[in-house]
Image (tube, rainbow, N blue to C red; front, top):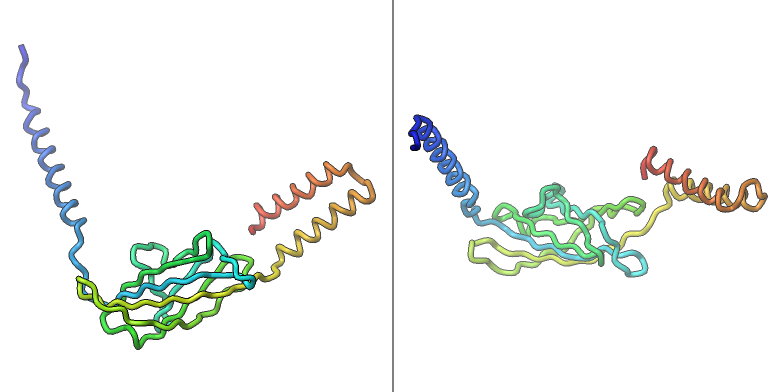
Length: 191
């Protein structure tokens, strides 16, 4: 025989509360439509002076000198893919474009940063939500710069060649010593 206990009511109330909060969270997750504004799709490629794409470049878009975060991107920058291409979708207040000054900045370690470079914006119509659509496309060129890391690596390479040439140490051990020094510097002083 099964006994009924008084614990069934609290479990039922807890289950109802959990269901209520889940329903509220699902309903609040469905965002209300944003007010109509200007929507800019900016695309392009970051290339080296030889015309090949540079991957993993951080691209920042400035509108009237202020950085603008791409829609759905938490860190505020777009990244160039494997071929150096990038796409940034920006939502701006209504009436901002086309009179605004739109610029692109790019950064990658060991490369010269791209100074804010203006891009030309073209109107592309209106979407179903009432947003005015704009597009801009431009390719940019960045070049490498010689940093202290280059000189440190070159000096260590020269040191290893001298150790091997004067036979102060076996060449395998000299190569391991050079690799260990590079790893030590990289992980203690940074890239």
